[in-house]
Image 1 (cartoon, helix red, strand yellow):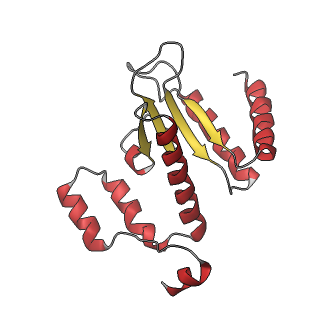
Image 2: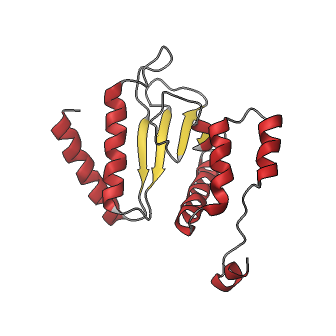
Length: 171
């Protein structure tokens, strides 16, 4: 699209109807994830920018911790009912469990989100924890939640909100 050249952005791509049909027939990708992929052509610039931020962060993690984690994106997480309905941006699972440290992480990048959206997201994590849907024979600890903030100001604001919320709920 010519507008991307004017804005100095690289081209953006999405899957066509035929591509989705091909993936449905030849892969085991969850049908809900395929539906989401099909709608990618109508996504907002904000969503695209957020997706690029997630990818940049993933590449940094892979460079800093090569081979230490299995990484799953939102689309790959659709089949897992034990996760929050609003899936995290990334889910990290340690390859070699270490008994002293948590080895599962739900990671969200909150760079351009208004603060009320961030607060709602945090509340959903707490509701999910309280529901105990995540408990099963393989998991007795809730995955560590990582919120990635673009600057110290937002980080301090988020940290203060989380501390107040957790003390109010008794967690």
